[in-house]
Length: 273
Image (spheres, rainbow, N blue to C red):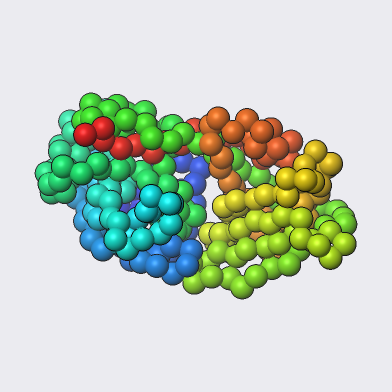
């Protein structure tokens, strides 16, 4: 496991945060979501070695819950998932062998998901999608019948000192999974909110943020972000990451206006069968 940890930590992805081995191992094997629900009922791993060197690995299994037709979490729903799948750039033979092995083990006619966002590792803020710096992984997935499900833009921002303004923050309790909801208040009235996932002591992940529809285009969204960054800086956070759908140009404009750097595209996949 130490070898696998070092292997993944060296990979080029903006959300492979530099966490301690113990944090990574718990996320890898015994992960929970923001509300403390166990993510997987079954989880397996297969590593590929050349001599004593790891040249790839795959992690796959069955989720402990899923989402019903109304988008609500249900224990009656479960997905077969390729959770993590990486191999050396010039070793598609390794990638093919690992993926074929996992798909045989899953042994199902159901739709198989790969890099499903919700079931990513908590030490990476559960960002489970495949980053664009691994096109050779995507090529192998597509060769085995996977197609792109969702595409997101990944953003990262260094948190500098921010000026306080008229927006106050009302923080809720931190959940079992290290997430915290915050309400934005103006003159004592809620005007929006957000949810933060604390990845490490100095890295936070913005899971979602919103402003009431009737208050759009008044500069208040910008002030909410400034107040949020100010509060996170006081908590000791020096970096705030987030993501948004590739076709959500309005959100992209907002993040880039608020000094978020566009890191690249992430994707999730599923089999068409």
